[in-house]
Length: 90
Image (tube, rainbow, N blue to C red; front, side):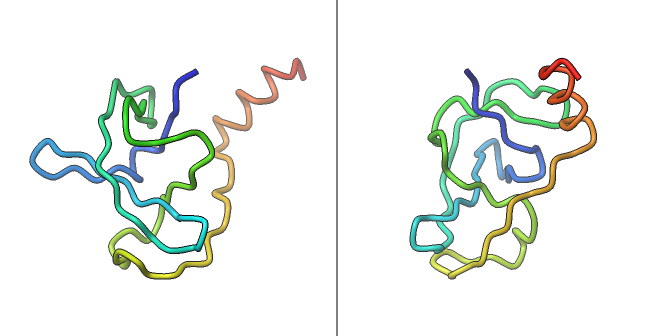
């Protein structure tokens, strides 16, 4: 029941971690988070992220707080797709 976020979506500065979220109004908001262990290329989010929130993974260097974005779903990584098929029993 852990929330996992791609490592590249997590920014670290002096042991403080943050992520960019797309709000209901499609505006970018930066949020400090507490990270747990890493699992392969994913971080476990201990605090600061709720289920269902949209995390920005690409283009972080161009973002600013409050900017309106047109977010698109991230394609599943090949390893994620293989794990999903294995879970489905295919």
